[in-house]
Length: 168
Image (cartoon, rainbow, N blue to C red; front, top):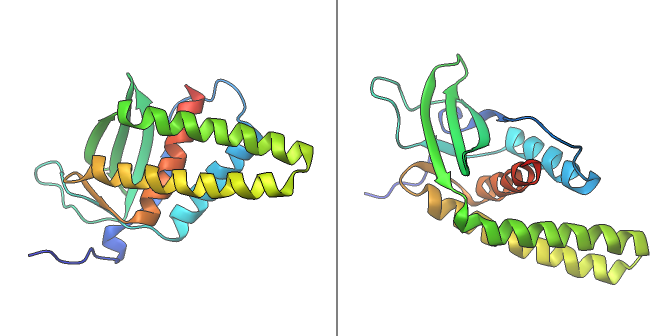
């Protein structure tokens, strides 16, 4: 029977940590996106691991360590007390085009701001929203059967994937 996902504290993230060193500073717009995504995730999210280590309860809240390792996106999921719940790796290949498009839109957005082209900025923002929607849909599909997330959480996680990809 299909039940709607739980929105309780057991089905949410308490914190998101981006793992890995930052080899250079992020562009201001990307840093702003990162800060906003993390803040939005802290305020509201739905996140339930469906694959857990034997003997470890699957209820949260959870701490998500998100990283790029060996060409994979890694979700290292812990309980607040530090107990690892699950580690899930996703191939980055399906995300590459979207991440590349996101970077190009971000660069175009920065240029449009510098040039003071309000109508261009508005068009780029619409494109970014569409790209985030596409990224969220892909994120949910790739995590199907592994982690139950809602669309808003998937959008924010896609933003963080773009940030991590830029770090690499």
